[in-house]
Structures are given as C-alpha cells and as structure tokens.
Length: 448
Image 1 (tube, rainbow, N blue to C red):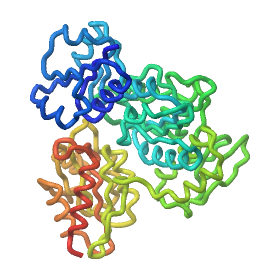
Image 2 (cartoon, helix red, strand yellow):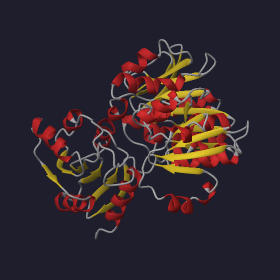
Image 3 (cartoon, rainbow, N blue to C red):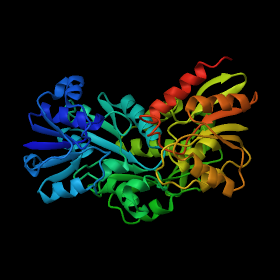
Image 4 (cartoon, rainbow, N blue to C red):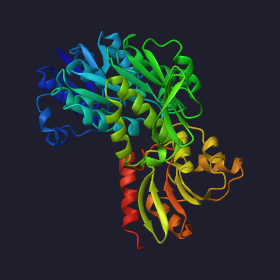
C-alpha cells in the first residue's frame, strides 16, 4: 500500500521509517516550499527511498496514496486535509499508525496538565513489573519508533495529546486516563467543545471490559463518567470517595464500598503540591487497573523524583533557589508552578500566543510574585491583563538571558526565581525542552 506522510518533523520521520521497515511505499510531503530536500535527505539517510515533495503539488501526486498519515502538528481542518479526503484518502495520525503496526497492551494518558509526570510514573511502575515496558507518545518518544519491536508481551505507557487524538480510529488502550480539562490549544481546536471532544476520544474504541480513570473534581469529566463506555475509576483531591482514590490530610487513600485504606503518606513522597498528588493517584489507579500489584506501585511511587522541566529544582545561587517549570505552557499549568513556590518569587513568563486568557494566573500571584519578567509574543497581552488586576510589578525583557539577569538583580536570599511561562515556547525556542535547558544553563553559569 502507498502512504502519504504529511509533515517532515520528528513524528513524520518516525512514521516514514516505520512504513519503510514494513515494506510500504512512502510519499513524504511538507507544505514548506523552503525546505531543502537534499539537505533533509542527507540528514535522514534512512528516507532515501521515499518520494519527498514540498510546496504546492498536483492531485496526481496525492492520489497515488491510499492513506494519509498526519503529524500531530498538522490541523485536521486544513484545506489540504479536506482536499485529501475529497481525493479518497483515509486520514489517520502517527498514534493510530503505530497502534496498527505494533502489538501488546496500552495504557494511555491525556489531559491538559500533568500528562508527562503521570505517564513517566506509569512507565516506571510498568518497568518494575514487566520485562518489556515502553514509554511513548507526546512525552518525546514517537510511538512509531517503538512499534516495530513490540510483541504481544509488550506493555506501553503512552502520553497522548489532543492533537494526536484527533486522528485516532481504532486506537484501543486497555486503560485510559483523562487527568483534567482546562482551556488550551484553542487556536487549534477553535472551540472548547471541540477540545473536550478530542480529549474524550481517548475512550472511543474502549469497551465495557476496559477502564477509564477520571478526575472527580473536574466537572466536565465527572459528567463524562456518567456516559462513557469503559468502567470508570475516579480520583479526588478535595473529598472522600466511597469508591476510588482520594487525598486527605497528608495521605492518599483507596476506598471500596465506603471502606478506606491508607496507601501512602505524602510526606514520604519526593513530589510536592496537590497537583502532583493528583498525578500520583491517577498513576496508581491506572497501573492497578492494568494489573500491577499495589506493593510494586507503592515502592516506585515513593522513589519517583519527577520529570525534567516541571517545577524542577535547578540550583541555589546567592541564597536564591531557581526552579525550571518550562513545561508550564498554559495558564493552568503555570498556576500550579507558582502555587508550589514557598515564598517570594521572581517569575519569568510569556511566549507564543495560544489565545489563552491570563486572568486566573495573575490572580494566583496573591502577593507571592514580587517581580514578573515578561518575554515573547504575549508579553504586552499579559502586561495588560496584569494591570487590569492591579498588578504593576512587571518588566519586559528581550531574551531569556536578560530575564534571568533581571531576576538575579531583584531576588533576595531566601527567595525564589521561577521560569513558568504560561505560554508555548515557539518563536523564541524550538520547544519547551530547549527553553528549559537554556534557562538551566544560564543559572548554572551564574556566579554564586
């Protein structure tokens, strides 16, 4: 069969390589006519046998394919995608392709915030209990790079974004989780309803013998739990549950038919903050539903130290503690970042505009933020929002380096500097990982 892979990024490259290894014919296409085909193929010699085309193409080229594989960054409502449908091509995404080509059982996690931490923790738990466990997806490892070597004994922890869920058809996790849903990526999905639907589609192919883990404190998800097909397991950070997992007074409990069992004291955990207790409960619920014994789960949970770029301690310089929360790419995530800081904080925010609103983020400062240093495309929009709420302790910086320098000048011993932008990184950086790495480098190079 001939496949058209749309997009020449990491995901498109991985999908093309998988298809070639499966002896399929691959047409690789990118709308960027400035892409240097020769340089691209030299950098990716494994793709020398693909027909790579860029810019405007004829229907003759597209019609050679039966299936189009969209990279996550390609919106499904692009005129190109609509045209491919008119030409009779089936539309799938990289996750769907990997699921079809791979094997084994899948535990899949989505949500606006907490996906990476929860998926990483699930991955560590699965690795502690199974001989062949993989961690894939939006976490940075394309599912397609692992699919070829998967067997029926393989277990997979997959972080799945709303972009990826738009193009799933038969993707069927044995256990799924939706951690929370707050406004994000509305520049892509256009409406909150479409964004919610994309998240809920993680259960699209699940049956009544499968499990979906949901956040009871999310009103949308609580309502969804009343109608979704798989068995629902709830977790809550705000109330006791008769059935499910909940947090109360420094401990995580599991209740069955109203009888609670204390599983772990949060003082025994490395992760701090209520949002992280939610992530831990979700991971515990997922992995127990997946078949992992609770004693294995608890050992890993107690040892788990979190993930890079998410409220990550970097260094203490001049008595000031520096934290990297570059993964705080939307206001809700950034609220969790500032809430985790124990004292006065110089905060670096701003970046690419995803059409987010920043009111709740500004309101969460609550006297804790002594200086807000704004960078990127959104800096004036955020400044206007801050002024509206009476917060005027902000300055603009033209680079992350300048922002760090300003924070160093204003932070006193015993205080904190936090990179938690509430915005995507694009425009100034390739991704949030690069932004976080540069921040850490700037801190480590600082004189103590």
